[in-house]
Image: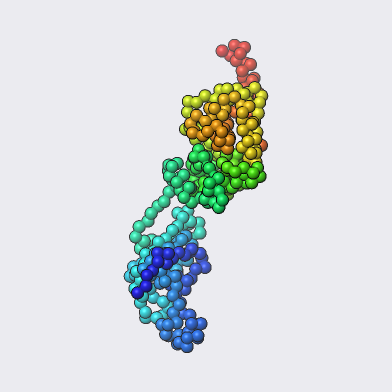
Length: 369
């Protein structure tokens, strides 16, 4: 009698086209027969596969459609009678094992398929989905992302609004017409984005020598390379390009979260400062002290930005992150504009269309009224 640890009770196999019956169930091992001096007809020459070794445990096969049809047929007896037969041996091993399969619905026809008799033997089919609510998505990302890093535990402070912006990017992408709905946008996008955001903030701290690490919106823009590969684009999206779409998604996400925090709060004086021809550029490599000096020049920005948050005015890194979030929110609401270098300026009014000017001129004469 031996105690089986829970780690030993779970066996996992990734299904690939080259997986054989020998890998899953077992086969004759001639080397074992030669070394042990056994005849090939002896049961001691059997080499057991992963499935018999998972007895009294859980055996998981990932990406089931990629498993060759004849291997899927080999699972019939195990799933129906609960035993396994290896080669021509008259040995029947009664197995007590739970089988779990995973598959992406899109892959059923793309690379392979699950044969009907096997589907019939599967007890229950659970269809998963992306998180439908922001708090649930944030919880998943918090659980899965590599955030607890050596030497950063006490120094790193990720603002809650930034977590929400990163998560909202995935929600915006799933609703965007330029992103393929069949492939979708998985939860891996916000997980990798928040990791890249924290890494960029960590890099800035190394460059500037700052002790406290607080990610900002500019770090989200620096994380665009971790977004572009996670989205399958439609034809229209392909014409625009993944980088441009990623920037649009950040803008939309920041605007959505901004509305939730700053509903009814007036930034008229801040917007007016930009309208007077002033501009502001906060680089993702600039220290919090440097950014704070630039932000102090903008009237009412710091005071108004801190209304929904409990940051102290003396906490420079948190204040800069909040102000940059506000500037991005104003940009999303088309109150100010943002250039490619990350600088915030006044909104430039588009030139009037020439056809519109001619049309206006004709109507102003009263000739056609």
